[in-house]
Length: 165
Image (cartoon, rainbow, N blue to C red; front, side):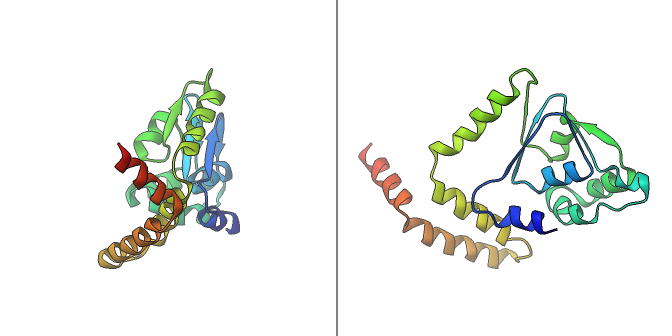
């Protein structure tokens, strides 16, 4: 439970790179991450129900990531599914070839080096703070974060570069 909460609180994106089987706790850990990258051969599943256990901790996150009906099916049937299915369900962000998986993950992650760190941090914080907010409160939270973002060095430098074009 603490690990799942910590992943949400860490300032920078937490990325799961799944190459192989991610079942039960492994699938739960991947689900808790901000982003999930998977190899074509990766397998996912929440099979706890098959041994009389409940994947209770992951449900709080799973329910926020996919539809209620799909989450119910996954945790009550316990079947394994491939990356194509995981992508359709909305559980993963990218699928990479097995042969180039490590390099593809490195390239994906390096994309974060090219964008504003402060904007990414603020975006992550805002996205997760919006859980449970009504629409108007979420809009106001966005306004507040934009005000903070405009004061960052990254934003000021970005605007200056844009205006020089």
